[in-house]
Structures are given as C-alpha cells and as structure tokens.
Length: 245
Image (cartoon, rainbow, N blue to C red; front, side, top):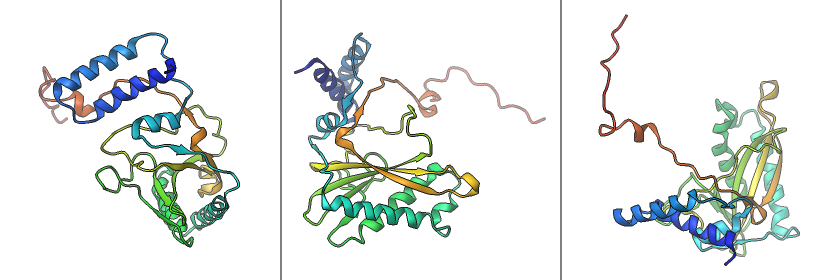
C-alpha cells in the first residue's frame, strides 16, 4: 500500500473507531494509537481524493458522472426551475434572517422539483439505523428511472467567493449515522447568491460539481464544547453570584 494511502487508512480507522461505541479499554487504546500517529512528522494528508475517503469509511464507491448523460441535462432543467422558484419574492426563503438559514429551503425546493420529473424519486438519505437525517453529507438521495442513485449536496456561496480558501465542504465519518449505502454518483450543487445586494437576496446561477474529482485535506484538531469544559467534576472553585447594582 502506498505510504499516503496507508496513512489515510490508519487515520480513518482511528476516527471511525472513536466515533463508535467501543468498550472503554478499546477506545483508550484507539485514542493512544491515533494521537501518536498524528504527532509524527511528515504526515501528508492533503490532496486526498474524497472518493478514497468515502470508500474507506462506507465501503461504497463514488462513480464518475458521464458529462453527456441524458439525466444530467434533465437535472440542469430542474436546477433552473429551482432557482426561479426561490427568486420569487413570495418564496419563504426570503423570510430567513440570515443566508446561512437558507440551505434547508434550497434542499426542500430541489427535492420537490426532482420529484416532478417522471420516473425520479428524491428524498432525505437514511442512516444505518434507517432514520432520515438532515445533517451531514450528503443532503439528498435521488433515484433515477433506471434505479441508479445520485447523491446531491447543495451549497450556497456568495458572488465573488469561488476562490475563497475557507472551509465550505466537510465530512465526518461515523458508522452509525452514515447516509451513504449505495455505489452512486455524487454531485455538489453550488448555488451563487448576491449577498442580499439591494436589500433582496437573489440566487444568480448554479454549478454542478462531480464529487468523484474533489480532493480534500484532513485537519487534526482536538476540541471541546462548554458542556465538556464546565462540568461539576472539572470546576475547582466558583464565585458567588454577582450582586445586583
């Protein structure tokens, strides 16, 4: 196995083990191995094909998308209808307070438009436990008339931000909440908006990205929430409540 693929396999195996409910002793051993590996120098975890990551974590393959597929042209028409519907001032997406809250509306509109196509069926992907789950990759599962599967993942981006280096795509491998159970084609649907210019949000154009060609990087980061920090067993001393003025 090539060194980089071996490194990827070791890291993913450690992350998946930590994400599952392993016995305490096994979890401690997995943590130690993963931390030791992360602390070593020379680890190259940039430019990893996302298809390799998904195959290692789910056992499923990302299939390349033939650019001349007839269903792809139908999907383009669906996306045109989706943007037209969302640009209607009466659409509920225009009542959201922040653009970050618009994603759910885009998913719902795209799902509705896909389901208008004869022979197509689009819905929320199910986890390994059989439950529909909104959060996490991917957002939508489209079944075409030949029963092949296409996963869709809509992403909003502001005009002029296509070259931004800020993280906009992420994937957290978890065995119990994985939503990918098919060898399938994966498409990222990039939707450009005007940032609310002129006081009205407008969705200007879309891009379809073949996820089989995306490369990702792993950022090793240890983190904790306030819930993790401020527990009864961690707090040593606590002040008295401040008196009212």
